[in-house]
Image (tube, rainbow, N blue to C red):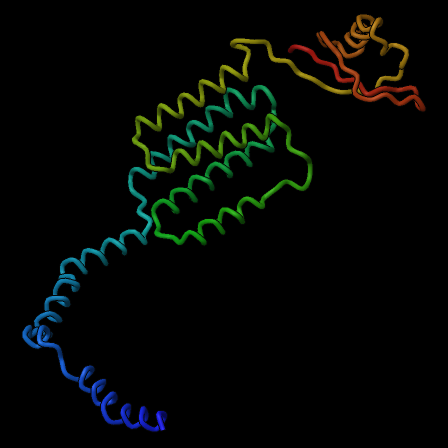
Length: 252
């Protein structure tokens, strides 16, 4: 009985009340007419840029997508190459006499300069830039191992090409190039300290490697090599062959 009564009440009164509540607008909203057309027009006008702004934006993007080889490019490249040639001519080649590494130094320097300049001028995605440097970082020497001094000069020339291409002022670039050249000239020449050279040999008189006979060993090596050897170090001892690998150090 009660169940049938509640069903009748719900179908008679509650359903029409919900219908009236949701369909009839409230007095506050009915009393406030809104001009939707005006609102839409204002929104579109505020969000839409003018033709001049669109043209300037497109022009800037087009300019950013082109590499401009202006006078800054050629002057920066000239300062960069001049510094590299000065370091090679006055510091590197007189000390090490290696012609095969000069080509490597020059090409690394020029390629790094061009890559940095292009990446600084052209609008490029971050993924493309990282991919380019990742491919470049995979370069390695698979033949002979490169020495510590050669690796230092290679890093020096790479850094010089990178700094030269980031659009500094000419006087700033000149000051940085001068500092690099002067520092290399002072540290890797005889201006401040003597240059010490080293070499290794296999020594057959194993009884001479004892610490108490070190002076005799140095004198014998000076007689054999004709060099001004001032110290030695024992790298390896082979008791089966009665030999030892010795590093000797001398001044030029």
